[in-house]
Length: 274
Ligand code: IPD
Image (spheres, rainbow, N blue to C red):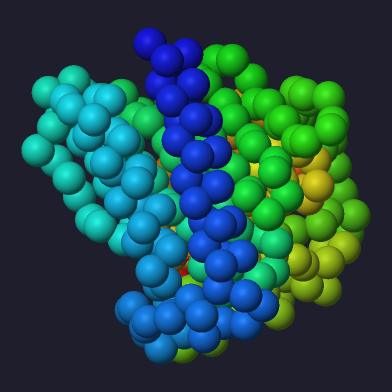
């Protein structure tokens, strides 16, 4: 069953990605062609392309798997299915601000849960053609145009001063100010910080060894469901600190060699207190 869910996740993320890229190209180089509208705050935007890509994902899931439930970033919960115990978590464009500015760091994220546990996930970046995928117990994999398929593994970085750490910031100004304080305490202790702009890709980059660690406060399940499984299948350790699982409040992940030091540092910076 996991294989079927994973194949469908990859197929849907790739086809939705083609729609997203076509929408970006049709809008030209600027931002106004995308008609961005404010969501939770003036800086949190949604475009007609986000909505169209989500309509496509939900429509295909309804057609192909009518007994499943769906949770989507732009459409909320479609729980009328759920006779099957399967729920899909879809983000039609993770990294919408990058998409708006034509920065090639955005992704379609599709994950499938069975009885509340994520078992399959795909993250596709239409701007680069990279597709990350994982099924529970089957490892994490990357395909990219013109490159051989690659099994992913987190880095063996064991030393905080050598660690490249990615994070992100929420859209609400007050939360962002607190998150900036945590980042300011962290920067002197690590190699550097990256704010790349798409949480799903941050987690895939952790899986691919492109960064050593990642943390963020205030995510939503559709941001991390697929990327979190991909990171875990590449060997990442995940936590929400203080005995809590990684989740909406706080999502921390790194390779096992750095885990104690990194999670300890995050505790010291007050990351768990927000
Ligand atoms: C956002 C991105 C960003 C993260 C924000 C998310 P969206 O998702 O993943 O990297 O820092 O917390 O909301 O809004 O572009 O789908």
